[in-house]
Length: 135
Image (cartoon, rainbow, N blue to C red):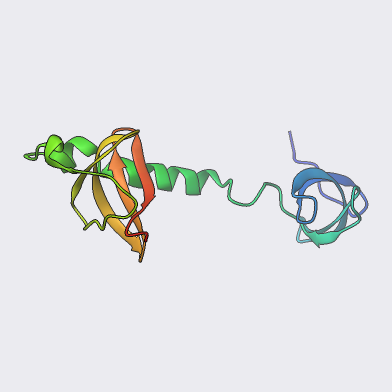
């Protein structure tokens, strides 16, 4: 079954940059068989065609999931006692590779210093970004 060619004036679902929803749009421009410009039938806004909501790329999700799986908690804790880790507190300062204990997530290991007051910590259920050295 051949794909239906896109033509100006036809209706297509697109992410509306003003409404922040996938809504019915009218095709305004097609270049080389690809929709390039649309007109929202709800708000009247004109913008580039977006088939999906920004940030919902399956490639980006699988890349993040693969990165999270590379550093699993048991391998990070190998040879260390999680009970010896400091109890997590937002006012404390943590270093990379430090073991900590969180009241909700349990034991974890600091895998990255994100910026001045954020750290990424690997827990049993995955990586979480936490605040540290908040005064």
